[in-house]
Image 1 (cartoon, rainbow over the protein chains, first blue to last red):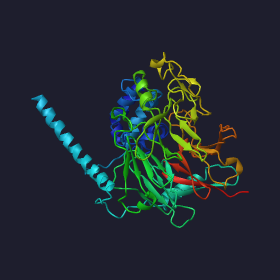
Image 2 (cartoon, one colour; image 1 turned 120 degrees about the horizontal axis):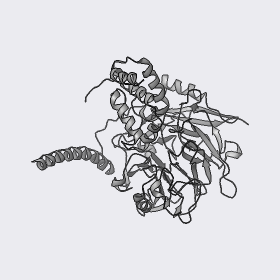
Image 3 (cartoon, rainbow over the protein chains, first blue to last red; image 1 turned 45 degrees about the vertical axis):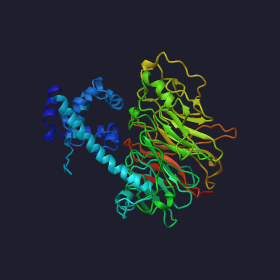
Image 4 (cartoon, one colour; image 1 turned 180 degrees about the horizontal axis):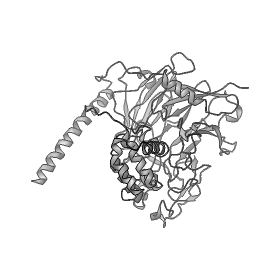
Length: 104
Length: 425
């Protein structure tokens, strides 16, 4: 299980685990999208966009919010109930969203 | 060497910041002097028909109302929050928590708005959530840390350059050091004497012990009052609130305010509050209480365990189910709804964001009894949450009276205003 978790993170960019992406999307719909948007573009001016965010960054930060190592009143609450598989799935989902970048 | 480099960088950043700030101040200064900015005369409008409007109408089929009532899409208004209906013309202003104040007009006296466009586009608004009209047609816009007013806004909004005045300058509503985005969507209302009330949420879940005295003194976590448009006479009218998100002053002058509850204490505690404000200087319990629940010393506020119960504090008149997030409210002032609704309060419940099973996403009705106190709250409009998927179809924010006796409900999720009218017998 732990190996699969590690491999999933490594290959998240290549969308190799479609199951994780779908599960992450479902979890995001109920736990994340109200503030971070259904497509990862945030709806709140003080919540960051997560579309296309690095999987490893997302999972590490969610773990840090869960443990309290990173402090944010809202995220500490949200992350408290996330399991390791859910955290991996959310990393897979957000990193799988394609973004086009255009500088001004 | 290091100090020099840091100073140079700091100077550049400050200069850049000053350039942007100067351009912004220039527009505001020009408009204050009834001058022109370089803004285009063509203000873009928001499409009111098409795929988005159709999808919103389809979602409304899920909404349940009492017999004889119906709900329709009135206007597509992105990020729609609090509303101020114009005193003389067929339009209203809608605040947002982003950077736009919308002007919504019904040009043909039909069932829907015909035009939605940005108000005063040359002014850079920051979280212009709260809007209200004075009796003589001044629009007040309350942002996180500034309050502006706009004479005759219901006429001047047709062009991009509007007359503007400053009620409270930037940085003077609350101390700049306490600024945040969280809980600073202001709500502003005006009483019959022209006094201006502004809700101030405190930015934390529960403020830490070392902020309690400061917030009490400044009115953060309370409601402040100004004499009028000149912004003089700032007093802390109410304190002991967490994040007051609604305020309604009735035709008889009675004042009611909602308050948001603490997060992280579980799905069912503590309750949301509806408070009755009777006079200046009242304390509504927070952070010691939320509803009847003792927050001080709980897991959400361990550092407040030695806090004393505030003297003379007032419990809420109505406690709402936890996390439904009742936001804006208004007295029903029309006469076309059945008698039981006349003079009572409609309250918009935004819906939960941190409950294991979503709750809220509805509109409550709270009657006001003959003795002036609240009767029990009932659910008036339900179904803004799709219960099969657990996802929001809409998140009600505020309620406003239209002159024809119907009411508007704003929604910052789909970005729309809905009109609820009564046609039954």
